[in-house]
Image (cartoon, rainbow, N blue to C red; front, side, top):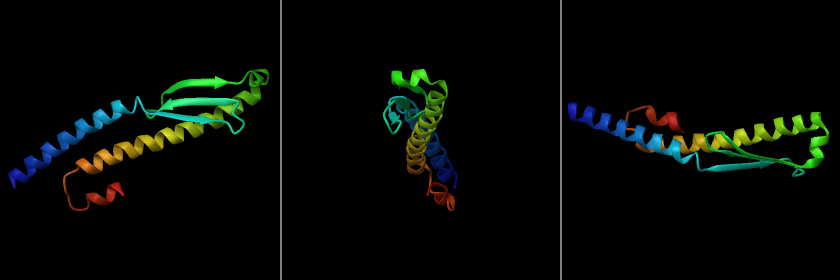
Length: 108
């Protein structure tokens, strides 16, 4: 029983390290989103950090329209980045979890 417990603890520690590495890797995974007309483009990394915003000059003339575009496009980009983030971390966690009865349903 102690051997099983020590094995599980080792597996959990290994999984924690893999999650840490995955979080670092997500700094390099880029997610792009743009408005339907292409006038606003946003790039985030999978950790949801904005890396670049490109605004067409036409949008600069209308503050309210620009704000609407920013809200729409940023929210879409954040949702995409969150999905990538969750998928990456879930895969690492599921792969590294010890076989504890009932725990498998948490990662489906």
